Image 1: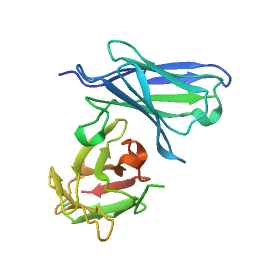
Image 2: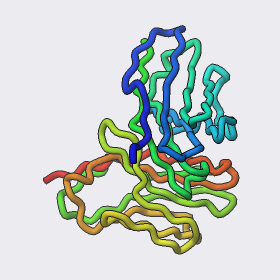
Image 3: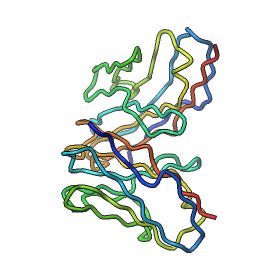
Length: 114
Length: 113
């Protein structure tokens, strides 16, 4: 079966712009979680969507937002980009949202803010 | 709050050496524990997991035992290969984290032929 697909793989944006990243989960998976990975802060949880509703949210500013569509595809948006937003953004899909029951990660979107 | 502490890397070993990567955790409840691996340029893959005390997770020759008395989940492999070179992350999930993953900093493993 197809894995988790994240698009685009690489992105370069200018400070102050906004960006939208996309994640298509494994077919049948209703939960999508987003994580930010940076060399300084490591892996940090952004938010989780389940059946089109944000169910959990990490400790990130309001510039970071997301949504999920009826087909479970999810997008995350970052507005007013800052240099510190440069990171690898990973999404993970699962049936229920609990890692114990299985998480599958995508390859990530590498965002560079210049 | 919950946290995960991993040994700092990089860890450099010769092929066929024994591997141990230490992981300890802090949690108020009874977390599930995980090891994920990240190969260069790729996302994260679940390597193994354990959901209760004394459980042993194993996969691809790697093992880790959930030790509640020492709050540890050390990763071991008896004989490493060059292809095991990657970054390894220890993580936990429990009710206090709303079942989302709390990650260690990652340990880079380099295996020399």
